[in-house]
Image (cartoon, rainbow, N blue to C red; front, top):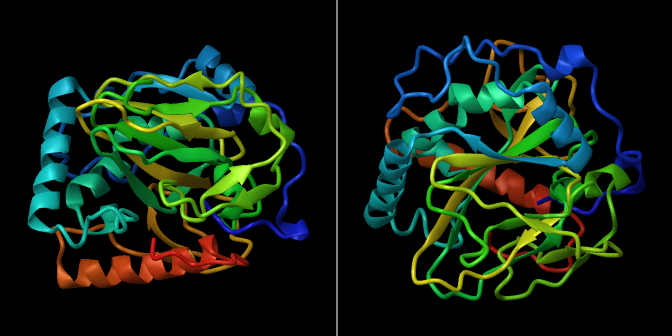
Length: 320
């Protein structure tokens, strides 16, 4: 995601592991009182990530699989999404899949799921907000793919203290186009990207990273209800779905730390914890009911601001 970085926006080369006090800070979410449509897998007495898992994240740039929902809970979430697609086809079609958590309460609840936030707090310093979400839906035997890219290239954010959580609602496999990640590529900083605007490329600008050897990429296989975490500078992509079933996941992109500031543009965020959200961000409420007029208005404003950020400096401007 995001507009090409100006020189002043480009962060330095990837840094090493964070101090242990940051890596293992225990998250106390202010959202625990909310009524989830599913039960969190972990309780507060269980550590979010082990030291070995945190070390893997900082060395490789990603971590998976991580259990979030049970199989039954994932099936319930999938049914909720597909039910919403049937009821609101214009709001959730292929070009309207950004920030659905602002109009669908079950996605908003998933975004602040205790298990996700606990894991996020193991790799992000005092998480305060979620920037955006994207529904990644690959229809059966379809040509859609995601080119090799780094998320933060176009996000208008000036540091790397954030993480993307990718939650599978269906199985995500090499056959149906799971995410593939290039281990350690986050340690090289941000690379130049070229915009191609390919019709089958799911990314906004069809951007593709230049000068990176992707032969070492590994497929991140997830079962329904599992998630992956990846660093904003990690090179990743995905192939088309060549199976007879849908491949569906939601990317919460991204959870940001308390000291992170936007470098440009307006960012509409939801708060995810007890730490105050920086005043440079526009905080919006989570939805109480699905697809309300107010929710649609909030989502439209958030998507318009996101589009301005993502297409900054682009030769073309697509409608998603």
